[in-house]
Length: 243
Image (cartoon, rainbow, N blue to C red; front, side, top):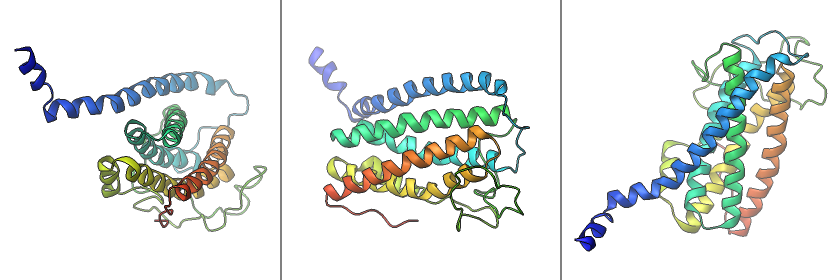
């Protein structure tokens, strides 16, 4: 009876449930960290002396926090998949760093949106907040990036760098070196696609905390992009074209 019972526990369904546990545990543990960060931020933000008036719904601050929350959420999901599936120490370390860093940043952005009375996610398209500034209204924020061609004339249906549903399915199904390479390729493209939004937020957001976070994202993700480019070369692979 014991042998039969043990054997029955090794069905594909039971094995699938066991394989999902590491990812669920990782996401659950990080979710608790984000909840704590969000509560702490909601308590701390109103005490800042340099905090301006609450940003409007169509502001750079709100649009950045909403769109980057979507962008970060996918990066967290990809990192959780890689973290629980890889046996490569370098990939595991990178995936853990991205997951924990971006989940914490996601918590901060969601806390800001809650504090400002704004929805946590955008509606009606993405990147409408990246419009051509009028006059000098957005100038004077110190060491800002040259916005170049970052401006948009209206909302878009998708954001640069985002993985498609087919990409995500392929990442979940891949194994071994193939999975590691695909994760690096998708995440590198993800970082590169989000960079203009982060640079724009660092330059044009009205709230100092938002500008600081956007600049931190720029600095962190540029370093991670260089690392991923090197890791792909070491594995004989090339970056994906920008989408």
